Length: 188
Image (tube, rainbow, N blue to C red; front, side):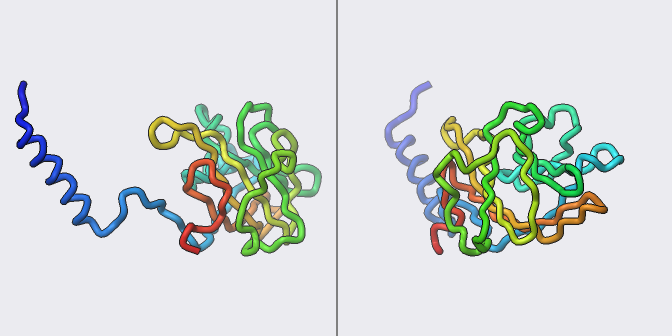
């Protein structure tokens, strides 16, 4: 099959005009500048298959006990003693890149960038949830544009830590930019 140079140029021009006619930049990132709020249940609750895990890249709750859920969540919630805790996958023996850093004495709004020091992140141990603390999450590896391998960063703040009910309500902001530690949109 042969294509004339003029035909190829016409198709290319039509595609470019289509992109130019769009009011949105096709390479822009969809930042959600306002924190979103969600909740998770403790793995210790007696009911099976409650939403106990969260995927920050997809901004979705996950049933950790569901077959095939391994690798699809970044943190889970559990009860240890008389406290709720965040569990990175490694705390349940799952090999993953997801980890959590505890930011003490810093307000949610003041955390503009995830820590670069990997020693600040916990990969394998439960992290006690404390009212007034903020946590930075490095996600599991995700597929990025053009076959790249990415981690993403998010910050979360407990809104309600209900140990008796085994329920954590938290607000969060998650970056949509591959391997970028910024936790505010590029326009801010």
